[in-house]
Amino acid sequence: MTSAQPRATSTGPSTAEQPWPVRTVSAKVAQWIDRLGSVWVEGQITQINARPGTRTAFLVLRDPSVDMSLSVTCSPQLLQNSPVPLTEGSRVVMFGKLSFYTGRGSVSLRVTEIRAIGIGELLARIERLRALLAAEGLFDPRLKRPLPFLPGTIGLITGRASAAEHDVLSVAQRRWPAVRFEVRNTPVQGATAVPQILDALKELDADPHVDVIILARGGGSVEDLLPFSDETLCRAIVACRTPVVSAIGHEPDSPLSDHVADLRAATPTDAAKRVVPDAVAEQALVGELRSRSAAALRNWVQRESHLISQLRSRPVLADPLRALDHRSDEVERLREAGRRDISRAIAAESTTIEHLRARLTTLGPAATLARGYSVVQRIVPDGDPEVLRSVDDAPPGTQIRVRVADGAVRAAVMGKDK
Image (cartoon, rainbow, N blue to C red; front, side):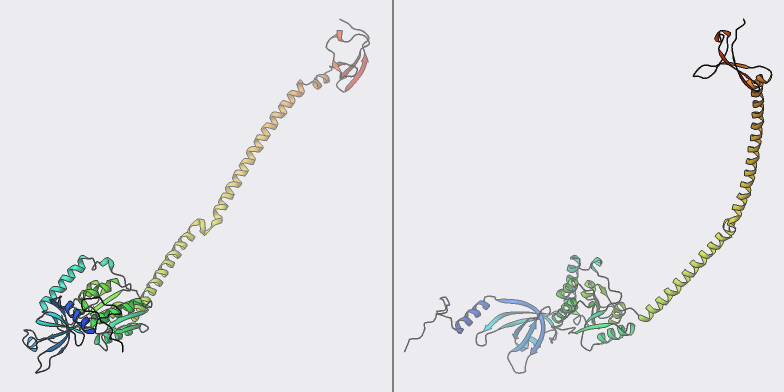
């Protein structure tokens, strides 16, 4: 028979050959947790189990912003002697020490003091958070996204079978029967409200068909509306790509979600009216616009017709040929005047020409010849006849041409006299 495998000591390293036993690991975990000491813890009580006759009361303390809880134990007298009655849903601050129970392998907070957070403290915290978010610019109106005129699908986050859900659905469907909804029912108060609202908000924001998201809840106390002043939820609303409408409570209620949302509605009914247009009102508006446009068109046509009538009544358009006829008569008068002037000028010039012709005829050689004179020309061989100007130019025997009024004769020079 082989000997038992050696185990690692509590001070030595843990290996595959020398593993620690469970008791050693549990003891070390208990030591590590014990080093944390006493702490103050804030949360919301979600469960109380305090049976009569027992020495220990068991509670569950939950973080309102995330899905995390912690087991708490305390003396029943601590619950009974609390100045403010502690119930499930109460916001508290506890002072205690964490303990690790090695037998069960569980961690529990053993508290020795419990302080309920009053209304004043809650309001003060909300105001501090309001100032912080405002300083970061999350309330800036420039960050608000406009709502679509006619959303195809509306995301609705509200309590199951709540009056807010009924109001939003009934009013929206009455105003626009074709509207579609993606409804996500979540708790709207209590410790589990914020985590489930965050999941629903993330899911609807990721849906490409959802055009706007409505957060709706009826009225309630300050404690009931606390989830909608949660910092995590406010930042998630700002981070949404889809416009978000906050319709929480009634008109006097003003959780922080109203300030970070793209639109604040006084009530869930008001949210439905702000998001969905009224079909009847829109139809009436369309009818009114049609009437106004038709009247404007008729007035424009009448005005243009009157203008055309005025243009047509002008002489130039009423009888466009009248101006041409008038100009035609004037052209005819001018043409006749021009013809007369030209005829007169031609007659005057003709008379002048006749006078010049008579003078030329009188002064010309033909007239001289007619009076008995003649022109003697010497015939030059192979050339034109030359006028004989001197007897020296015509020696005897020279051929001459004598031109008279009715013709010419040829002769030869027989002699000359000086």
